[in-house]
Amino acid sequence: MKKSFRFAAAAVLLLVGCVPQNRIRPRAQPAEVDSAVGRAEELARRGCYLALREALQIWESLYRRPEMKKKIAARLATTALLLAAREKELGMAGAFSLDRAKTVIKENPHLRPYEVCAEIADAFWVQGKGILRDIVFRSVPREAEAQLLMAEENLFLKAKEDEFFAYMYALRKCAGSSAFGVLAEDKKDNLEELWPLFPDSSLLKYKKAICRGEEENLLEELVAAEPLFFEAEYFLGNAALSRGLLLEAEKHFMKAFEGIPESSQVAISLASIAFAFEELERSLEFYEKTLVLAPDYRDALLGKAICLSYLGRNQEAIAVCEKLLDLGFWLIGESYYWLAWNQHELKDNEAAALNIEQAKNRLPTSTEVFMLSGLVALERGDLAKAERDLKEALEYNGANYEALLHLGILYARREDWAKSGTYFETAGRVLESAERVLREKIAEVEKSGLPPERKERWVKKKNYQLEKTRLTKATAFYNSAAGYFNAGKKLAAKEMAKRAAEHPSLKPKAEELVSGIK
Image 1 (cartoon, one colour):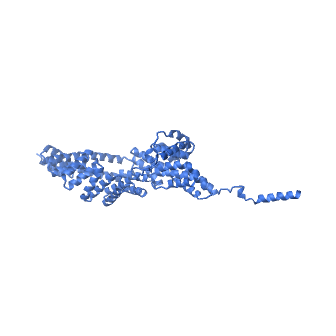
Image 2 (cartoon, helix red, strand yellow; image 1 turned 120 degrees about the vertical axis):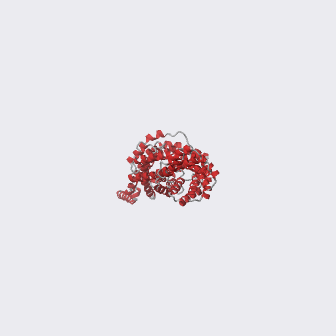
Image 3 (cartoon, one colour; image 1 turned 60 degrees about the horizontal axis):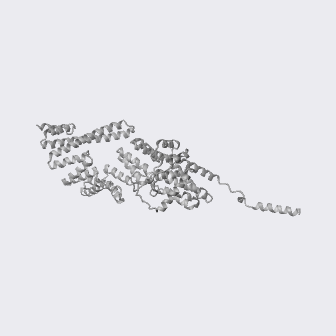
């Protein structure tokens, strides 16, 4: 008995020793995996676009490991959804993160709770200034929409406990129906209840800062804590722009562009500010950068066309206008106007006349459109049409000095000297006001914080415009004097001639006219 017992015990020990070790203790996770997970989690907590993008790359590499796939699927999906929302907030129309999130959710049935977040991110439109892209409205059955709205109620319960769900709930409620193609808008959002639950969350601070308009203190706090939060710089730029602070806005937009050059909204904002400073080459450069990111961005195409027009690159401008017309639907009136403007510059008044009529049909109260239409008609000898259009241009802007000048020319051709003198005089007085505004602007810029070289260029350009305005004003007064003289209105003619004589180029002729008035 004793011997057999020892044999049995030895057999049991032998069997235990043969059991594979991995059935008793799970294999330890490699140190590099633990390091990668920690790094990705730390990046996600930082909450900015660049950190989210890097975190997504790490989760993707881990997701390719079969043993890690299920463990980190949720992290990959949520990071992709956060990044998809950020991409849309920054005008990145061609980003892939949303499709990636949907694929991961579909591959992992246990991620079904995230489907409503994918729907919210999908329905959220790419945000843009102007016409960034054509909007395709999705038709959603009432039943499906009702189910989605019911899911949102459950989403709020999760949002109170989880930072990610809180962000997606806030994305939906902050934007409202204007930024969604599917979801109905409801008045109750519970956001004031939500924000205090995550006081240390960079994600939620960012969302709160841009929720109903830029809260600059929160945005500045984000930038101070995280220098890579370049999207906060973009929204700080928007806030400065809304107050008319172009230099401050430009400073923030440039910082944003340095960190996120793939944002069409940052690029077009810089193009617009450069245009406001009349830096046409620089503006054109940023419009072209915008179009690399969003080739059919209507406002960027129109901005490019206008820059090319003013730079005298008329054929290139015409090609851009024709592309806008081919795209259709948006900014058609403006495209026809600039097409006609450039054709007129190239002395092709037959084509310009056709296209300016198209612009008139679409921009029926534009003083610029009717002025150009009147000018083209005047140059083609159709005085009746020119008179109608130039007068209509003045109905929409009585200070349109070009319309006034051309009416003066028109009535001189008809030898209606009194009317010619009146329109030339009015044009001169409008130009006098424009001259005063230019002087004030030059003085303002000279005191501004513009860098010296940039200031010098801008003041030089404005001084050129000022001198051109002074000469045009003096010429208008001289032509007014001639009109009044021919109409027999000697006192009015003398007054206008004296005004013309204030400019050295017109002084000899104006004084000759004055001496001839008895």
